[in-house]
Length: 531
Image (cartoon, rainbow, N blue to C red; front, side, top):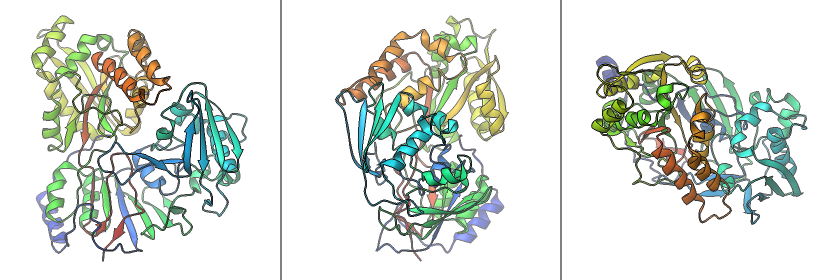
């Protein structure tokens, strides 16, 4: 979901400036001085997290809470703001693949316990695996299975080798599996099996328990989630004693909470608020994360099955102008599925540069022109209405007439799944640090939508390139092969990469040690608060 811009009224601005006039300063991401231990860190979330279940996760804000409760076998190096982030050990200390990359053996960390004191070992791992992959398991969960399908579609079985060794087996090579295990969603974070065995799969999220640095205390839907420091955390003592995640969807209310000191940090900082924040000594770090904004076509619309029309829509989009005018310049244009933060990112790669003459020429070839504009619905979440209005005005210049269909979030999601004949494209925000992200874009984002599979079938070279990348057993060529597939995806204009945010979080001058890494989460164990 893209951020909705707003401008502070003069009265609210004056109030907020008055509130913060006595605030102290602090370096961006500062860790100056000896870290102080203790205290409660309060984060203002822009939307309500979904279930705190390691296998049912959805939304970035869910992960930013749950990663403090659950660990994975691997993790990303969250101290790296540049990226691509490295993969580091977590609940597994090491791992190795068979020569054909179909079998991955993980050596598990010893001495780790779940929050109730029970041991983490290969048996506990096996129950997590069976929950998402084994229909014969009493607690097999179809919801978890569907969310983890990207990495477990070709899973053939798991095997306990000994108490601290476990092997995953697949029917095809899976060179990207260790990085996949470290992703924020659709992956295998580890929960305590004793909880779903006691409360059932649906009850787990009410009693979430893992091996992470913080334990669950309470949750009040629409208000807050409270976590407390895990005194037995295997990774060392976190600096903060308590984490509180407040749900504050309204942009102005969230900003006011930060400026008044009610919260220490907010996500989805609004472009119009950045100057206000920085003038008052608040920290708004630069970064890119590992997600991006892209437009997904409705391929049931015959007009968008025409490659010339899709290329025209890309030629007709001035991405830098969009960033400047809608997001006050706080973004970088994307011209590829491999956005900044992805391990396969190539800065110099482009699909089609802005060119209105080429756009109108291609539309003319397809039968559209001054007397016959291309008419499409632009379907958006209500929070993206401002972006939709900008796109509507932009595309008029090349002879595309957009009708904006602005819907609440549930209705928007339903409309994407069942598009109307005149729908053009919708706005997506997602991404990951793994090269196999491209496979998700094609097989879920295109093939998984109505009409998409029929279009992809007309490009066997794309399917062939994906198969080569997906089945390579050579780590030295893996990323190059995914880039080959991306080149075809760009050439065929099957999606529109748009931009990546460069401002996303804001936090108080008293916050130290916060790093916005080049991925979709962050580490709060190193964060501390000054007096």
